Length: 200
Image 1 (cartoon, rainbow, N blue to C red):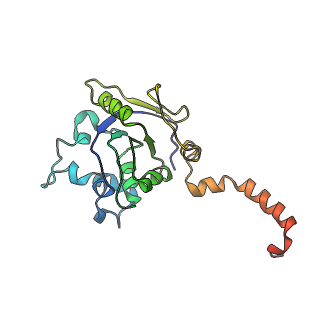
Image 2 (spheres, rainbow, N blue to C red):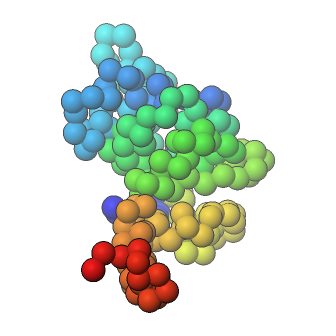
């Protein structure tokens, strides 16, 4: 999994509330496709017009936000079904960080399993960042996971376990494997205490 340490990138304001996983990626796109190719279908229902042309009103189709790697979103982002494919689709289109007042819980957890930083901030702070991203001549945002800051001044909290996973590029399996010396030490001590548990 790709490490996340410091990211300096264009931030796009996407303040729509209740963006569910079906809007992020349609259910029929969730099977039979490599995860690396899902990005072209992310936000398909709002990104394209019925005839297939790009919707010029959609924020990520606007010239200044093409290639944005940070989304500043409305509350309850990623609600709905528990499809991990929604996170894959965002990552495939280049999104590395999503900032919102709240998230669907399963989506939120899936982000950290796939190298995407989900940041929860108060509504007022998210609104201020969205306005900053939308301002003419807006500069790229810098998200520093080590310092837990956005643009050097906006602090965010993150669970230590999630922070470690992103900084070191580990999913849950990798996180467990990193504890192998501790696991081996426990097993050795336990074998002495309870030898009958272990086959000879």
